[in-house]
Image (cartoon, rainbow, N blue to C red; front, side):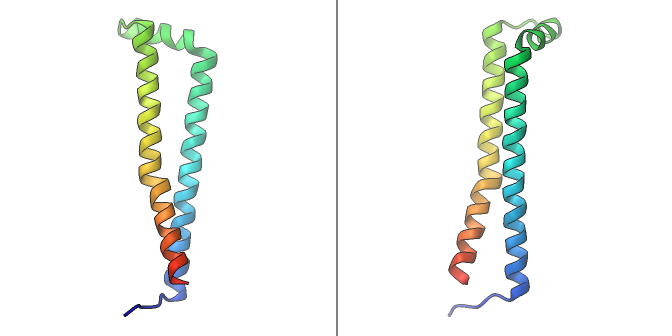
Amino acid sequence: MTRTLSEDTIATLDAIANILLRCFVITLGALLFVWLVVLMLGDVIYSVYFQLIEISRKEFELFFLYTMAFIKAVNFLFFLIPFVAVKTYLRGKR
């Protein structure tokens, strides 16, 4: 037995999906911004990190690479996949 959703429930789920999509896009924009800053000012940022903790240039680059990859994976896991799931659910219920 399938239950139909009320218009309020559909509107709420649609609003949640839109919020998830906006969060995904904002996080991608922040990742792009950080990547551009590191690309343009990498030497300056490295010198600051080197003064705080003595790390090699390769370790510094790996740190940013792994951090960006982790944030991107979390972005997909918490924002894009739920967005697709909600939209797919709504498409099946309409």
